[in-house]
Length: 320
Image (cartoon, rainbow, N blue to C red; front, side, top):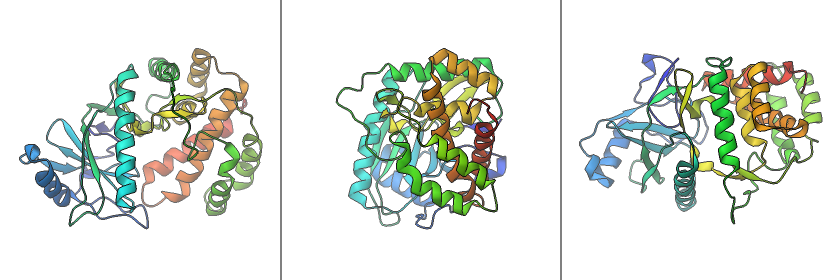
């Protein structure tokens, strides 16, 4: 199992340590350890003497750097308007702090937001570092212990009061048909990679599933790279800046990204998920996985393989 020491990323071999991240997006910004080091030194001088090392990442939205032993720096990879980016980072910091208060498992804490500089044009952030091993799609797929931990995490998050918060209306977790245009793009891009007619037929059924209940608090992206384990035990949850209300089925994607059919059934039983809620969880996992295979086929093979693994689990499950 790959070692993991930093929020939002995973290592696949010792050679993954690098100064320049691979390019995954057409609008990707250049960021390397030299740029990160200079910005950290200038804006957070108490870390000026700490070594800064880029960690090759399975993540897709941030360049991740280890700063000394206890800090991680995250630099958004895709170009954006700086003020809008700063607002997003502030909201994420609030969500991270709230998640850490309520989670039964360790989570990173926000430490600061950096300003744009001459060599990098966007705000960026610092957060605490968590120790652990990155979960993988198959490494603990038959672990009862890990399945119980994931069910416990989801159950704890669901019990958090949403208060005045509401679903943002963007991304996964709202109305399934809102994603039809994106899914059509994925089908068109996947013709030589996947069994598109079968996948189209499945989406045509999943997209019509009704809501199974009111929004509840969700992590929003429970993929393997955002979960840290030690042995079979969940010890950390990463990328928590999306902690917010959404479809209660959204966090069930973890069952499809991480577990075999038996362990998925265990999670379903522990959470008391009915037929519609369970199928909607599969629908959100399906929607996410369809975009991974073609988009990251060359730039992030590990993410593309996650997409294939999840699609296979959904397609092979007779209950779906």
